[in-house]
Structure formats: structure tokens, C-alpha cells
Image (tube, rainbow, N blue to C red; front, side, top):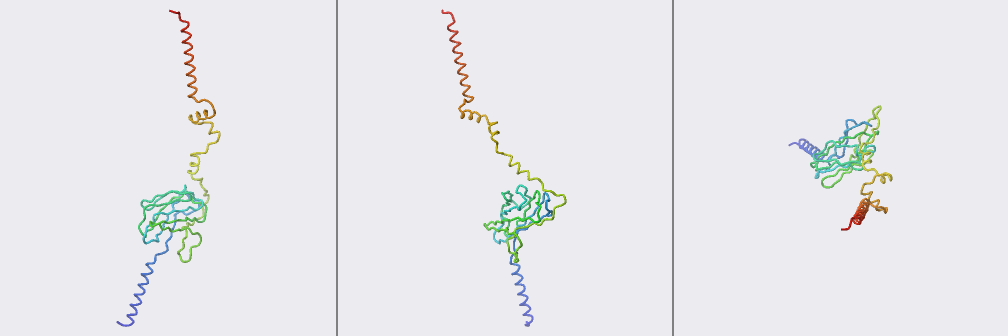
Length: 239
């Protein structure tokens, strides 16, 4: 074998080894959000999220999302997701979780937003939990780092609102929740108490309850009957 041939083989082997090593280095994982109708004030918009895995030993089990300003948890409904995953609304967003996806697999799910706010972009801060307890925090805002290994939150860029588009009224669930058990006023509390409460209030005020009045009336009737009986007996002729 000539020196030139040997040198070419050596260079080729080194190049192949370098390619294998580069392929083995995992790409920077992150969470992405996209929509076919990413427009300010658009209604009933479906958002699709893809959470990429950066673990070689555990699967993704949960995604906790903090909603951007202008979107309330009550305005979000669950679409589709990994098998067995469920959606739960939180005070400031929502959680989707369930059985772990396969190790190294991405977790993809969708939600429907009642209306997007009038903004240029929306950031969805996300906490990504694995079956071994590890948590990836995709919560950073601003420009991504130059090395591509930051923890930027997924951001959805919005087009300008359509002409004539207006914000819809608040989600119906909010007023319904507030009116389901309103705080009664003082007048409402005293105007229509329950029967048991009425009796109790009378007794507490020093008055007589209904049962007490029934007993008094019964006693009066018995006494009157006794008087009538005695008068009739005295008036009857002696044998």
C-alpha cells in the first residue's frame, strides 16, 4: 500500500469518526408553540406545543404552563395529547400530565384558546418534568443565548388584529362562579331565614317557639273542658 493511499484512508477514517461524534451530541432541547391562526384578537385558536426531551434515561410526564397576560385559565380547553394525559386548570395557567412518554420522545399536545389578546407576541413559560423527577425550566424571556443552550420560554408571534376585531366578553365561567354562592346582604339574611333558624332566633330573643305555644293552647283547652265538666256535674239532680 502506498503512502498516499494510506494517508487518504487515515483522513477518511478521521472524518467518519468526527461525523459519528457530532451526530451523537444531542441538539439543544426546547419547547415550541405554533398555530395556523396566530393573530391578535382571533377567536377559538388552536395552539400546538412540542416539548422536546433532553433526557436519555427518563420520559416526560408533565408540562406546567403559565399563561401570558390576557389569557385566563378558564379560556383554555384541552385538545389532544399523549395517551392517558389529562388537563387541569391552575390559578395562573394549566397542567397536562400522564404516563411517561417513551425515553427520548417528545411530548406534543394542543389546546384551544377562546381569544388571543391584542399583543405582538405571547410567551408560555413551561416547566417540563421527567419520570425521574428532573425538571427543565423553559421560562426565560428575551433574546435567546448565542450558544443555543438557554432556557427560553416558547413564544408565539402574532399578526396584527383583523379590521373590526374586538375583545370578547369575559369567560362565562367567571361570573357564574361568583354568583353561585354570593354573600347575602344583612336584609337578605333576616328576610327569609329557614324554619329551623326562625324558631332558633325566637328562642334566642327570649320569645316562645311554635311548640311552646302548642303546649300552652292544649293546656288551656284541657282546663276549660275540666271546668265545663265540673259545672255540669254540680247542676245534675241528686239521686
